[in-house]
Length: 258
Image (cartoon, rainbow, N blue to C red; front, side, top):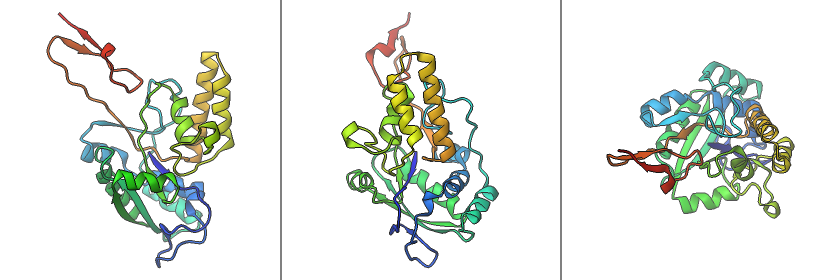
């Protein structure tokens, strides 16, 4: 997942084409965020970098999990529309962007973001990529010091509210919300969805609340989803592994087969 910074005002990592920090953050404009998302060729990343071991994402939840919204369409690779959106937002010639990525945390993350940088350059957003150790990167990202943050989030509970709480709700340490919302995305509809889903005990109604929140984030491009990692297990002959939707590895996944 790519988390754009929603910090207002100038940012040293977002510059005009002369290298001067822009007075206002262009990532606050949904048209710019949508342009960046449309400019990414996700199938190419899957095929050429990840060797088919990931599933291209259009939302933060993988299919068949509680809260996944099947109505959301895949994000197309559309350079022309991306350029048009940048022009509408006042950046027909693009701008400069420094993208930071941890080099020792997520499989192939630097290589993936190098590809993303190349895709963005094609629409006029000139990217400088900086690879940092996780300890340094996480400290800066957690303080919303960066322009672009990259994070992967395991589906520990098997449903949408877990990630919603940590990476999408408004940062509020007193409520335990937004702990990994490094871009400081904030949308009252998303916050309300979390509160409503927490109070709702009817499973069908709760699912609908979470699915609606996924649609809100998708329309708002609050994050830019790239792909879902596929967990791969190996087992000796005579054992059968049935993975859990919670993304965890547990002994209960394994049964003996005759």
